[in-house]
Length: 366
Image (tube, rainbow, N blue to C red; front, top):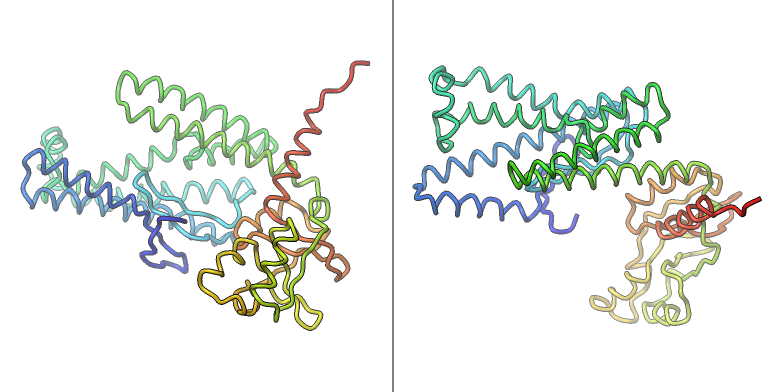
């Protein structure tokens, strides 16, 4: 993800921190400094925020590690100021798997809250109101940490996409309904809650307006994703491929590739060597190579070598999932071991537009 810095790897999963997290730290520092707090108080506030985002990482790892039990891999985890995001290579579609994977994140927060409750001093509980209204410090740290984790668990269990609760709800509905209908119902419930948040935000807290829009758009995106999959499941890879394939020899130079660009509208080029395809290169990669390589540089030195072929009869929805996690997102297609074309995300999106138009075509009156 652009703008994200890799901060480590846990259980084989790359963890990224978005640069905007630094803005949050700077904002917290400024607010506390403006209120006249000393360096120690500011340090406690920053330390608390860092600990909260560690729990966000643990929350997302709860999803990722549980998903791995069902042979669902996680590409990476990205930490943003508004929370975390575990990006799965595929989404669990079996109701039981989706329920368990979705519930795993909030369960981590519940466990952290339970553990932290044992370290809350009794005087914090007795003077609860005072402890919560004062800034975070050494004496009330664990009480605030406990409350934040309870809040994170409950917030994520709101039955609305893109929260975990929306997926838990869909999983439950999928036991009785088909997945698309279950998604539609869960999305509508989520959008109704989003409207309530937005309205409530004008009277209670403006932050609720932001949450409402986040939920509304998340529900819409999930519904569109399932709609897309429901269409693609009806077709095979060969139904959406681009039959025209431009080829370059691995010994060809960047200069010859540029000349081919001028005489072609294609965006992707297959590289062959001794009658065997060994790589792929995109129009963008060829153009960008001019800034770091000489024109007489051979294509084999800049091409993408981890070429993966698709079978022409493979379900189109499976191919779409594969393309979304590949760079470049283009794959050559074979039928009976013969190359018949290439498939890109753009091909599939154009194909979806056509099929959607066909399904919505107004039928002539009888």
